[in-house]
Image (tube, rainbow, N blue to C red; front, side, top):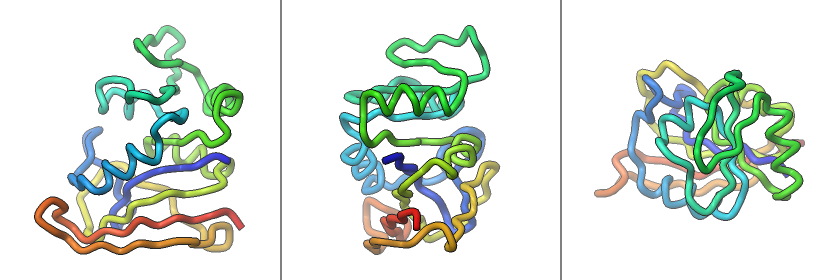
Length: 161
């Protein structure tokens, strides 16, 4: 099973200037718990925005730069190559983004594990549209903003029909 995991705003916003636009500790905690001990696949820009490999995960990053090196990471040059390597090691690798990697991965994904941030943000990268003819919502948990999480949000899972 290949899972895309992302936090997206109402307008499908993902980020701006290679950074997240919001801070939701509940989402970060869920992301860590969900991806721990799994293979995670991301683009070079997403990796560079993190600044280091995610601990206790096999970090695979995709770049067109054949000479790119990242300590603690497997570097590949295509999503196909990343998925082939990950599937040898993990029956459920996670695609972490960014926008271009999400777009490429949508046809291969079996599941979308999303956090919807109930707010519109100014952004320069966006999550692909979720085609309801292909994806069925299978679970949802809604949460109100609180002292730690500034925005209302929902954890939503979609599975391919």
